[in-house]
Amino acid sequence: ANRKFGDVELYLEFMVSKDSNSGVYLHGLYEVQILDSYGNPGPLKYGDGGGIYEQVDKSNKGFGGTPPRVNACRRPGEWQYYHIWFRAPRFDAAGRKTSDAKFEKVIYNRQLVHENVVSGGPTRSALELSEAPLNPIMLQGDHGPVAFRNIYFRPLS
Image 1 (cartoon, helix red, strand yellow):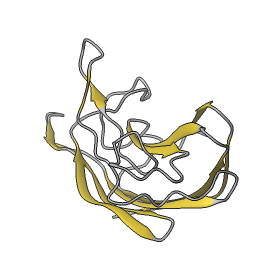
Image 2: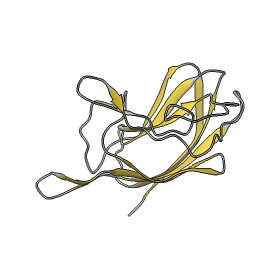
Image 3: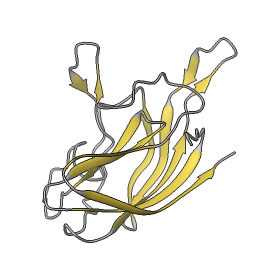
Image 4: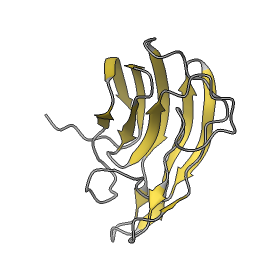
């Protein structure tokens, strides 16, 4: 079934192989990057593991994105986890967006990597959906091997 969420708390475990690249998309639109960034001394970028990926404009030019505060990535082949608290964008009665989506908190392997990070719009490779009060969660898996397990979610009121 295609379940949709508004504000949500999401916990999921994942494992990647060396150099694998994937992501978890809240609302199918806003990506927290999954990447083998193990041993990367920095400076960290939005595309590193734990980053909030960049947005794209109408000409497909990238902009924005937020790097993780720290490199919390474990070695390839080890299980890792994200624990994410996500606030959906808000809309008025006429359907106009009144506030952007926000990653209230992202914990990556016991380390705080984001707090109150606003995402003004969909990130690269998002589903072809409009921003809305409710949308699905999407797990990406097309840039190298990735495994997911122990996926838990809780709608937040």
